Length: 337
Image (cartoon, rainbow, N blue to C red):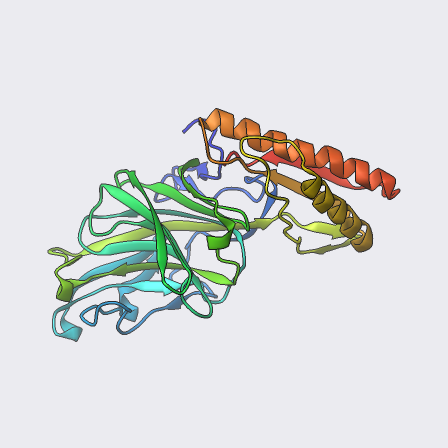
C-alpha cells in the first residue's frame, strides 16, 4: 500500500508474512514501547497462555499446548483434542505482563480458514467492561468486526470491514482519551470519538481463538489456526525534563466547534493551563496530535485535524512567550480522524 498513514511494517522477504515490524519512529508523535517478532521457540516474557473455559460458553476450552511459537510465528491452533474427549479446543493468550492506559497496538496476522472466532483485543486488568475488540472474525474469513464494550450495561458500538482474513494484514488500534481509531494495512477503517465511552483504565493486549459449539456457533469442521508474525506497540512520545526522559502526560484540549479549528475562550483557557504545566514541569518537548469530527473525506479530515493542531500550537507558543518560557520544541500534526 502506498504511503500508509499508520504503521504497517517494512517489506522483508525473509519474514513469514513478507513484512517485518515497523521501526521505532514509524508513528509520528509516538515512540515504540514494545516489539516482538516471535523469532524464538518459546513464548516471550510478559505473555501468559489461557487455560480452561472461556467466558460465555461452557462448551469452549483453552489449553496450553494449543499456543505455539516457532518458525518466526506465534500460532493459536484449534483442533479436536483427544486429551479432552475430542472436544474442539482452542488457544488464547494475553500480554498480561504489560498493561497500559492509552497507546497504539499493531498486530500482523492471518487466519488459515473459517471455524473458530479469532479476536485481537484490549482487555481491562480489573473489572469488565470495558473491552476494545479491534479485529474479530466471528466464524468466517471474509470480514472483521471492531467492537467497543463500555459501561456497566455492556453497551456496544460495532464497525465492520469486508476483507480476506486468510491473507496477511497489519491490524491496529490507536487508543487516546478522545478517540479510538481502527486501522488495517496503514489505513483507517473505523473510529469511535465519544470520550465518555472510551476506557480510561489499564488494559492488556489479548489474542484469542474460541469455539461456541454448544451454542451452535463458531464450531469448526476442520483444524484451523491464527498466525501472528509480529506485534508492535507505541506510546505517546516522551517528554524531556532536563536530561532525564519521563513518560509523557496526555492532555486533551476539547471540544472544538463542529468542523472548525477555531479556539473558543474555553479552549484558550485549557491551553493557557497547559502552558503553566509545561513551565512548572520544565518540559522541553511537546507533541500535539489533532483530530477531526470524523465527517467528510479522508483528505478533509486530515486537513481539519492538522488545522486544529496548528491552532493549538500557535496559541501555546503565545502563552509560553508570556510566561517567558524558552527552549520548548513543539511538534504539531494531524491524526486525520
